[in-house]
Image (cartoon, rainbow, N blue to C red; front, side, top):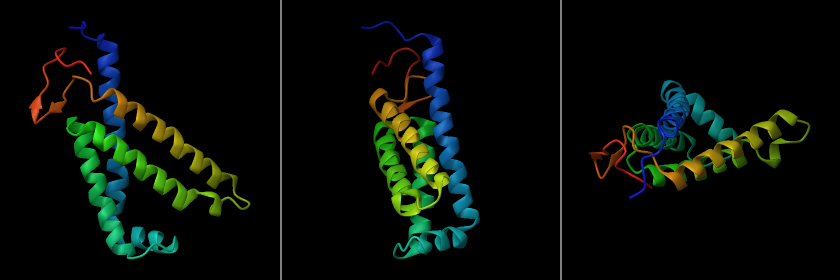
Length: 145
């Protein structure tokens, strides 16, 4: 059995989970508080059923927040979040939006740095601090990925 990771490493993983949760919690709250505005934004991108998609996005982000906070289904949530962020980057900030707008290109590129973090998280797991595995709290230092 490998020795436990240093505390700075374990705390860093927990902080990353909290950052992911906070980002999706903010996005989720904006959607729930302004669902019609979100639907209008989605409709402007010519996606079908914008109100339905706005509600689906808000609840999907809620599920991501719960997974990142608890560590449950962490790898699956990280991969799903990466795919979601890629979709959002392409649809709302992709090449069709770059004409004369370096800002949109910057938003597009920013999505890829977020995706890189999510993929790294998916590969390394939720760590062993305050993480659920099969709905059991993992013992500190006992779980190694």
